[in-house]
Amino acid sequence: MPSRPCTFCVVGLAALGLCVLYLVFGERRLTIGQVIEKYGYTELRPPTTLHPPGTLVHVSSHSPLTLETVCSVTAAFGPRLPVSLSNSANTDIAQELRRVVKVNVDSLSQVYGSARYQDVSNVTVTFGRVRVLEVADADVFANLRHRTPFCAHAVARSWQTNDTVTLVRSVLQADVTYTISFKSDGDASVKAEIARGVAGDLGLTVNETTIGTGTIEGDALYWGVIDDVNLGREEIVAHRDSVRIRLLPPNTVWQARVRLVP
Image (spheres, helix red, strand yellow):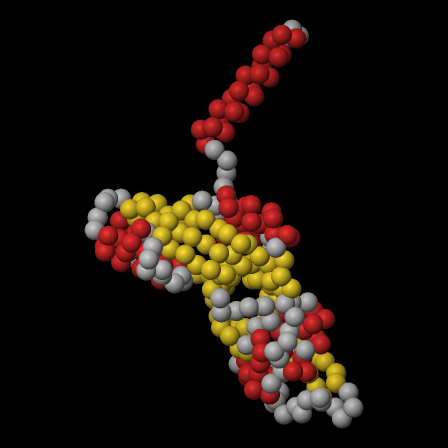
């Protein structure tokens, strides 16, 4: 049976070994997509501002997620659909996104297939103002009566062609700053041109005052979405003295000849 001092030595050496491993390999960092998916969102690549909560969309691709607008928020639910905004609830998401400090340049090159990344050594990312925007189920039902006949027809036509319509229920929004490091000190105009190309790949607009330094900024971008197919299938049927709501079954031949009750 080992003596007590020897036991302490073994425990101490094990702890020291763990510390050395941590210092050598560092903390395991998640990618942007992994952080977004950890909190129940599906990553949008590139991030966008096109599909706020309440938009009816068709998913044209799942990997990466690509959305096509069927109805705008106003066409689907009128101009006053309430959208709740949360800052305080996003502390954990914000902290994890801020730990994502680098973008894999090889991954960018593989995704976009561009030779411009041969001159890029590193891309760092900084997130700011992380927020969650979402619509409540009750508000969706309360505002269905404001759907335009044109939107109703677009939804019905999508189902007729086997295109699933879904509702963007929640989005993860954040500002971002990308900083590009180059492998060599080249001409500023060349760097600016590379940065413009990278910005285009990432779906970001270019600030010409900072593009020469390799800095790209994006404000209020949607990085992830949560959608609801059932809410996307809701239709409104109007009667003289009442309004009832029902699910629009898949593959239903349905014409938008509804007179909405005020």
